[in-house]
Image (cartoon, rainbow, N blue to C red; front, side):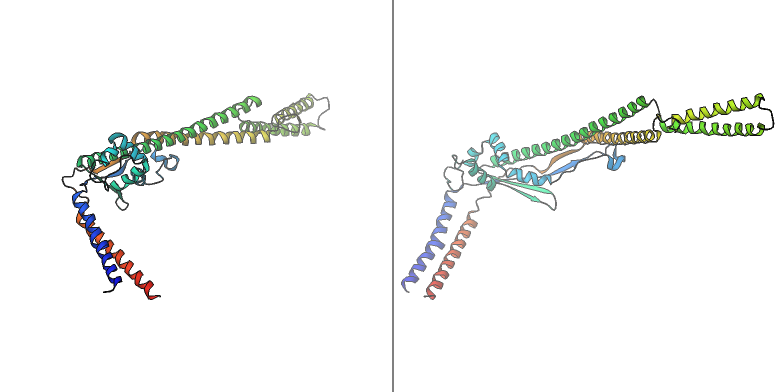
Length: 365
């Protein structure tokens, strides 16, 4: 045995035997018992079919952009959850109960960041994405404290789910209300523009008036042709003083004046100052098209708003608890024997690595 061998042996006794033995002695004599409370829950959505489901894509809706359970998982580990539970239960007092256990207990004068780190080690959520179920494990130095913390975490998780549901419903209803208001304004504007057009031009429907005027002009043209033929038949066969010639000429003149008057109503060339009915009809058709589109948009927005109101009244997201917080009868932590063996194993591993490094450096000389 050389001196280095004695140093290696002494290091082995210190790291692998004495330190784990001291740690084990502390665990078995000073470490306080920790009790575990388990709870299990998941989110569920109840949705009653709306009265406007037949409208299909015209009746809008809203879906959650992320998993509610992911939100709850992060919320449980957050400082916001810690603060809410601390206000109700005084976590500093609960986590600092065992005065004889300085390693496991929480220092009462610790900062909020220290309390959050300690909270995340004592309150552990586990979310199974395949089933959508959340299990919650809470440790404390008293079984009733563990159960109380788990119960309060469930209550606060239920509150955040309710807040998310109310916010989503309020947003959907507000957006539908805004769309409905814009549709009402657009429809009213279209109706007002159409009314102003009819009042300004004194025409109810230019297309119908043009059609009626065209029929009158066609009839007058036929009558004009008949009167012209009768006049041609009499001309040259009767004296110029024949009263029939003057009557036919008068009839022809009257028919021509009437044709010119009717054509003037639709922008005929006989009246350069008459309104341009081609443009008038085009403007009227555009106004009618805008009114029809505004009415359809209003009906769609009204259906979407009614569906949003129905969803807000009947669609509910809630937290479904399948395992109420349990009350422990025996402690589950700290696992004294296992922790002692782990300490010895870690010491052995550290001692082995140190010895190998020592001999590796020695062999390089």
